[in-house]
Amino acid sequence: MGDPKVTEQFSPAFSFGEPNRSVFIAEDEALIKDIDGTVLLSGNAEVRLDLLPRPRIHVYVTNKKELGFGIGNNAKILELTNHRCKIKGFTTTVNPSTSNGISLVWSPYSEPIIGVGNDTTEIQYVVFHLFNFKNILGTSRSWEQGDMASPSIEHVTLKADNWVVELKSLTESESNSKKLKKEGGCRLMHIGLLKKVDHTSFLGKEATEMLNALRYFFSFAKGAWCEPVCAVGFDFSGNRVWESWSSPTESSFSQLSWFDEHHSEQLEDLFPGFMRCWFDEDLNDTFHKVIYWYLNANNSKVDVGIILTQAALERLSFEYVVNVYKLKKAEIFTRLPAVDKIRSLFSNLDMDIPASITEHTPELKKLAEDFRWKDDALSAIILVRNSLVHPAKKYRGKFKSAMYYDTRNLGLWYLELSLLKLCEYSGTYFNRLTSEWIGQVENVPWKN
Image (tube, rainbow, N blue to C red; front, side, top):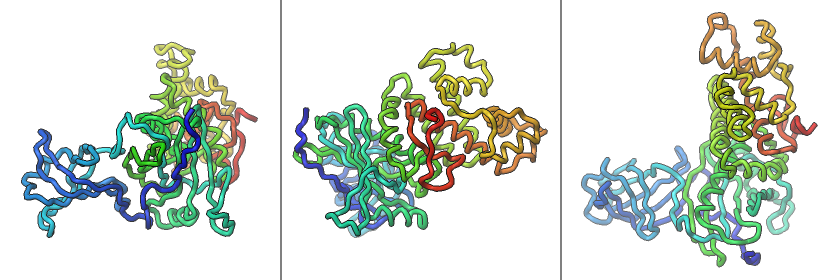
């Protein structure tokens, strides 16, 4: 059991300042090397989180020595000497005529970058930042210095096994949410704190794994990519011992999703089951990919969304029916029509969802009646998907854009419910087919 008396610094770990402004992350001495380790340039370096025109971590280097010949495409690695951090990437801007010598901008190939510490660093707790998340009402709230006239701080607490994640809004979250809808860009909406329930320490590798899981959790809730950004790990004494540098995904608006921002208990109820699926060795790869496809389907053009949604449902069906619960052999399952594969998933998950095409997708229902399709919603989705991939002459020019929207929305509803049931979730949700305003929720079908 760890010591519960640790004083946690639950506030932004960097000076984010004005929205969309470049944020200072770190400074150091930098060496830029080629693939053989030969130094091409050295100088002073500033690591910054740039939010415009596109969110990215960049390193700004100013040369102080007479080096710099042949930088260009030869530069492969930037080394921050005091941080003992090597960053693979490339130069995006080289300016040879500044008063301080050569200056350049270094763009990492990938993020996050572990800028402080490593996989074996012992951490007591991690503070992270959440940009562009939904403007949630918490399950509890507080006010700064007890001033109830000021904007409330909304709190949500997620628990799973020995992990706890505390999420809280900022005093400016409400105004940031309004400006996001009006102006776009990236704005800090919440800060989070990750720790162990029993106050024991954990390793940098565990922090990285949990932050990745939280990336998918918050993204599934939002319906668009939304990840913990610029996480900082603290030790027992409150020292910064570990840092993960990263940028937010530019998604300034919230797409439709199962999560209603006025019902944060939905996050708390889902989290244990979500983490169980995430760390299940049999399910992890499929769970990861299906959420990835769900997010892409929810944020792409309608026709692409229809195709991706069916792909996700088929992948989930195969994993659940064949690999995990071994209800059918692979050679038999793969020969089934797509509609039977997905129906097998729904049946074995015991989801209790209607099979018929309802008035909630009126354009799809009308199309099915016009072409005398059988009254089966899943079959209709697959027929529309097949018409996109293998266009039949009789359907050319017959499908309206509103029908495609109905089809994608219905498919995403099936996919959201499948994932929620897989996580053994039994609470309320925002029904994308019927809900008309924020706060209007209903029980998942299998709870009724």
